[in-house]
Length: 217
Ligand SMILES: [Zn+2]
Ligand SMILES: [Zn+2]
Image (cartoon, rainbow, N blue to C red):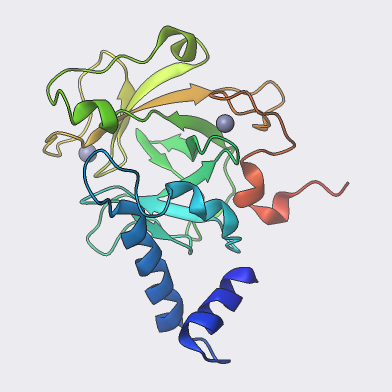
């Protein structure tokens, strides 16, 4: 894979190890969050991961800070929820993919014996507004909100609950630990249009997730 080539080039080795791979991922993780100052863009736009053709997909945890994993996993080492991430190749809008199981957003992981039906959740970006006005609840613009059902997500444990309801988990919810999701229900069950920028393409997000699911054209 191309990722593998990057690893080999960076470490000048023909024999890359897991340590090499994780180091590159960590480096990218740092560059995605590092900004010269608050008003600047990160050194590396977060959509870089579109170029990483990870065999299993891209998995993220958001607490205590965002981390990316290239292997399917249910939780971080600290026990925080890990989500299956997909994103639009044009605008970078992120989507979480999975199903709500016992009140929590879960993706299919190896311990889960049957592949579940995937649901798609547009991950609303609210942190940019929050920096200016920490306590203000940022409303989802109406034109986006009417495209799907709005949920709240606890980024610590993965609990989801409906907008305007009380949280269903016992985590401490300090600022930034609850995110807004907009569940998109595609007509044919496969998300092939970005609901933010309108880009249409076959399996717009899926191609980065379950490649074995790619339709045999
Ligand atoms: Zn929670
Ligand atoms: Zn888009």
